[in-house]
Length: 346
Image 1 (spheres, rainbow, N blue to C red):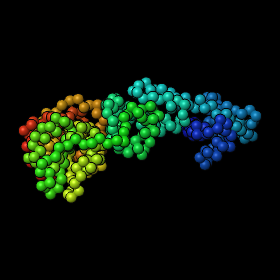
Image 2 (tube, rainbow, N blue to C red):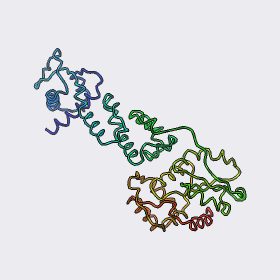
Image 3 (cartoon, helix red, strand yellow):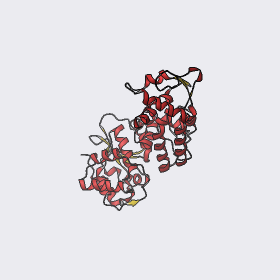
């Protein structure tokens, strides 16, 4: 009986892939694995006839083998879709109302098989973050949804968004916004151009007060994920090519902040401003990030590049895995300024 079930599933796959409504027995036999036993697949075909997946083409008659079965069949395409359609309806009941699945109810079943996991991924993003309010580049939005900056542009992600009617709602733009930054009046007195990117505006304004007391050329306001797009044009805004540019990043100690750094360093080789994070770990933890989408690869990359001891790194893992976080604002003003003055970039 087990072998019959296996052959039945194989035949169902053949029927689902067959483009025409009619199929000859000989066509089924050609697509079965070599060595398939006639009695087994004949019984499987009889089972599919009884279940209504196929109907006999009466004019074709029966073959003349010891277990006689029809020579040709009409494929009941709607019946073949039952399992897929039921799955689509089950998923629809549990995902965001913003995600529309009508396309899959009338398209080739392989589209649902290919896109299902991505639809659940998009749903997870929406449930955690909502529909975006601001425009983002395709790479930025791709990374936010999938932790892969190439998913939308190079791995059919845009196609999936279009199929579920979310392409426009995801506010994807190709236009870069300019970076917001301040220039140190001594910007040209050092051996390299060093730039500190901070995630939040409140930290930007606090550090701006002591920019001239550091050896950093600029202080850049990252504005969360926006930095991913605006950093692309930064060198046009700061058009000096006579020295090496070195970027440092300091954000909230949560998955979101770590993902921003991870994508930033992949595109621009940004360093972690480790001294800030080491100081940040002395601050109390806060609750409220349980719904953030984990990014293990980004986290591991962050810990690999963070200049901190193993105990601190284990502490970070514990914070992230329990849905806790430490915002930049947890650093007291005195500590914040002291740390920046101490960074020498070595």
